[in-house]
Image (cartoon, rainbow, N blue to C red; front, side, top):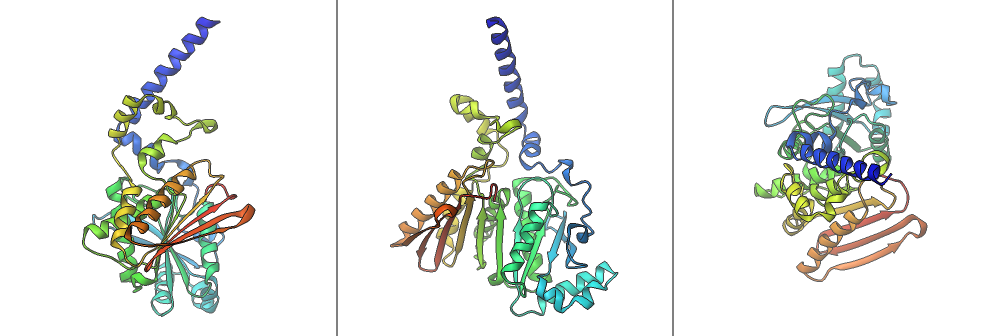
Length: 352
């Protein structure tokens, strides 16, 4: 019996080491991390948003051409009240191109229009159930003027290309600039709403603007279920039955160091936040995380918020306030000048 146990452990260890070696190759890493090739979206009719429960032409699909010539699939969601006011012109359009034109004009001709650009997480597309529910929730905030633009990164869904850190940042910048040009909406009326992988993309996008000497004054950046960096995310990566595949690396430091150095994409949100907070004097940054999130530990948001709040305190005396929501969770807020930082911790909701 003991011999069998030893044989099994040796076999399992060998299999794990082989899997770790395979995962050290960039192509494999990206397939595992981004999950962009999972076939869970194949049955989705992304060019027919009505099949996801939206009203006729309430959602129009668009193509965004990136600066490196990839083609990104995107949805523009019209808020309910605005849709009702223009229902006759939208609902009766059999022409997809005409419906797109009407939707774009609604944003352009509304001096109070606001746009949420949604940076989704890994796997699936703009049409996943959780995401379509999010679009509806966002529009409820202001059913007259709150539009939503969601897009699939390169390699996801119907978007061309293959995902890399540099590529996804290029996608994000291209979508933002497409919105400014096609919707004629200023940065000040654009909120960047990100979730999971999207939080890393959004923060890296702001860092990109900083590196170019630009400081777009976005309405805000909201990060739901963020992670500190790709190495930490991989260390907590769970597979079947919630098992953390790379957990043994925490006890084998040399092997952990070797694997981290092999990561092709870094997604260092912690480093980006330091630069963002020091560069943006008018910034509204919100973290949201659920304690019941079993994919990305809530501790990552605590670490990011601690880094950000300490950065504010280094800039000078900062306002610090905490609101206890009882069983619901808590909200903590820091302010320094026009910089505003919030951490919202919810006790329910799973993956935010």
